[in-house]
Each structure stands twice: as structure tokens, then as C-alpha cells.
Image (cartoon, rainbow, N blue to C red; front, side):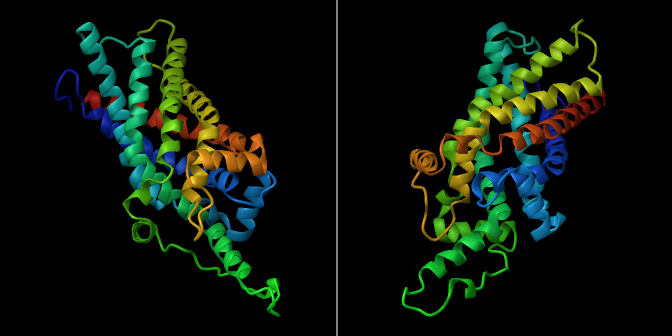
Length: 316
């Protein structure tokens, strides 16, 4: 598995496996988070959960999961592979030994670079996922937009305008094709700027707490961590990262879900100002509790699967 002292492929493979496991665990709450941040009519997290279940059954929580399951495995492979190899390159450049553990400044640099790189792959993945998760509400928005265009002198009452029940997109590929046809290639990167604001500090607050917590849970610094300790460190790191990233995540979700015929938001600043004026400062913390809850099992699963896979490959 090792191609050189500084570059290893097993980090990429382990990241791929961990990514797939984390998607299965975290997608239902990710759907709730997205609906809370970019949707309308939900009074609380519990109300959102109950609404999805009553209107769309349990399958509603797994809308749009096929695409993340296929793509986030690749995405996490790049994230974990890039982060681990960047650490070794930094150690090799600064200390002459790629095996030397990184200091806090080195970890911060590797994390922030990872956040930048992740956007190139993550922005289209997140966009398609959110469009698929939001399409029930987007169909409703389109229907109400059409209803609002009925001449005021018409005798057709608003309640008689039927709302289509079919989905806007037949699946991930149809979603990508539709976005390319209507918005062009740049449409796949809508919200990428907000994603940079989320992921650059977000990954720093993901990998550094995980590293620090692992060191605290391994007092002698040499023994292997118990799987429970890995899950605890990974889960806490995930919760910390997602809670602090919530404001930028709200803006990103709104920009990416903004697929109606008449755009609501012209860009990041316009989205922030419009959201603040219409809903107050609390809007930027919408979904933070779901992020905190979702971040724990998802990241615990991610890090545990990654570390166990890495141990397996390096024992071969």
C-alpha cells in the first residue's frame, strides 16, 4: 500500500470506506437539517421529523441518499487521503521526517488546505443532494408561484389550484442534467463560496479536536486507542465542527436550494442580508441542534471505520 515514505494510498481507501458508512448513518438527520435550513413551515426539529414522516413515510428521510452514497465515498477518500498525506509532507518539509507528528500550526494548515480542496468535489455533491432532498418543497414553491400569476380578476380560487405531487428530478443524473441545461456548469457550483466559508474553518475544527481528544484518551502516547475512544473523539469532533459551521451552512443550503424560476438570492451577501431582514439573526442557527446530534454518530462512524480500515491495510 505504501508508495513512498510521504505518500500513502491506504489513507484514500480507508477514507472511502469510512465515507460510505457515515452517509448511511447520517443521511436521515441531514435531510431534516436541510429542510429546516432551506425549507418553510417547520416549527421545530421534531415538527420537521413528524411532517416528513407523515407526508413522505420513512423513505422521505432517505431522499437523495443514492448520490451521496456513491459520491461521498470518493469525497471522503480525497479529504482523508489529502489531509493525512499533507501532514506527512509538512513534517517532511519542516522536520525532515514525514513520520513526525504535526504540531497545532501544522494541523491547522493541513486542515484548512483540505477544506479548500474539498469544495471542488463537495460543492456539486452537496448541491445535487440538497436539490433532491428539497424537491418536494420546491415543487410546492413552483406551484404557488404559478398560482400567484393567475390574473386577479379570475374566478379561480387559490385552493382550487392543484399542487403536483411528482418530483422535479427523477434521480441524481436527471438532476445534474437539468442543472446543466438551465444553469450551466457554474450552476453545479452555486453556493461554493459559502461552502468555502464553512469548510475551511470547519475542517480545522474537525481534525484538530479529534487529534487533541485522541491524545487525551491515549495518556502514554504509544498504545492503540480503544474503538470506543475513537468513536468518542470522532463524535465530539463532528459535533463541534458542525455546530460552529451552522451559520455558513445555512447560507450554503439556501443558495443551493434556490432553484425556483425566480431566484431569491443574488449571492452570499444578499442571502445573508435577506435572511437577516426577514427572519432575524436566529435564522443562522437554524438546524444547529440537528447538526450537533447528527454530527456525533456520523463522525464517530467515519473515524472508527477509517481507523480500523487503516489498521487492516497496514497489517497486510
